View 1: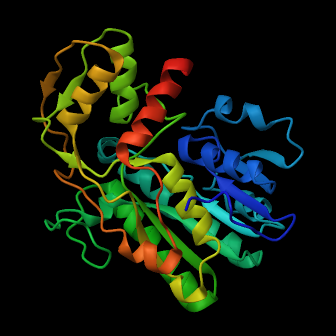
View 2 (view 1 turned 180 degrees about the horizontal axis):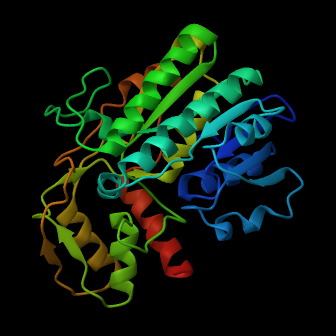
View 3 (view 1 turned 45 degrees about the vertical axis):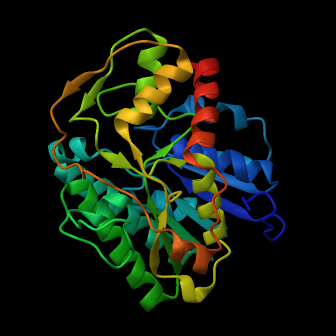
Length: 324
């Protein structure tokens, strides 16, 4: 269970791209706590220096400010690296609809640069962030790898392209790649600010400030909200997975299903607030229901998530109360 018992060769060096972001900084922290070396690559466009300042005194930590859209930067960052955890990307379905060309350059070309740099530097394992958005309009629940529908946004397209490139790098170049199809990750250090903020931190922040949040749509949309600790486990177990499991993508979720309005009511109760939400229009490009089958990851990666939604939400609420 979990990941803290996992052992890697002594002095292993992990490169975490997007390491100053929400998921990336949590990966950096977990790996440093396990006693291994971390190189964090981030251009700080969406990540935050504040997320990684706490590691600056750690002799096993190195920060490189740089952009994955630049191949030379990627080549230098991959020197001497054993494992790449490629989290660098721009998220948000709505924002991708406004900036399709930028998303292509950043999320597709950037990931391709990283794959090529990892190959040329003899990296052992390349684990990268994909997304549940690749399922598009496929109506069946739970979502199962190999059963995808029509893509609904430029963001989803970028993640699907990343998966195809990674598959080719395993097939033709012998680089073991593993795609992490994240389902609505939440937890400590997730940014609650801005128009594209994730829903849980945004709701928590507004409720703590006695403001009225807006729910897009009727609140009956459902998601497989996945606590950050489960995501760390999936990434690190992928670094130990077999070659036979490479060249594929895996659902990273808990396998639960939560409705947005129920989450909102849980938060108001937990925070002792009595605030009715606003209801706004549905978000363009969004999937109505999302829930994951995690049996493939369980079987091929040994992924066995510890944190159900309630346990994760309690930890997240406590963190935001102390840090907002």
